[in-house]
Length: 249
Image (cartoon, rainbow, N blue to C red; front, side):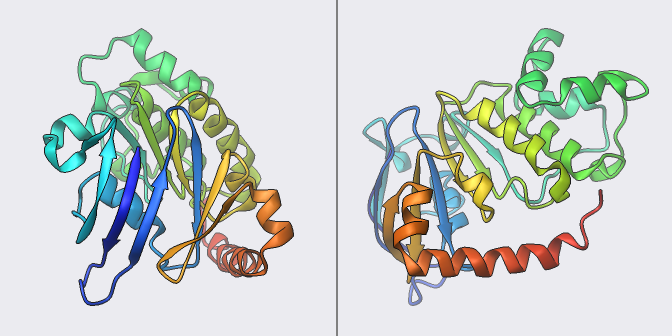
């Protein structure tokens, strides 16, 4: 996957990303870090073609993604967004959304990888349990694990985890990180995260500042050598601490 001199702004006169150049190897995991509004989630939206670049190109296997049919492109990418959307339907139907022909073995394989299988079995009707509108009958951690299972059931080549631990009570965050670590293994993954424990799951960190890539390296290296990186992390942690006071456990 390659981002080649990408420039984009929701208002073209106010670029969110400028001269964004990044190559991600097959099977590699990347964490994208930056202050609020820096363009982290924009990278994911451009890859999914929710928007097209104003300038530059994005390549997947050497092919400009604008030459791929949207369905063909998005079938190759699994996504877990910060605001998990679940349907007023069974657990089984929610997980199988990305693969309607999934059989029970497929559901259980994905759920086990996502760390969801055990708690699903404890629900009143297991995989047939109705979970209510937007999944509000489940905890934040349970919703995210079902969302992760849904994202990987079709075995996508690329996985995007967009702030996947943000809606989870801090006491359960470790469980979600364990699930993320498992599903990321050997799979090209883009992690958009705020918390150091989640960022550290990635092999490389791409730090965005002032609309462009300011640094690339391992999380520990950037913490040790980059003052601005430390400052952004500290500010994000303070924001998350305030936000977590409203999280439903």
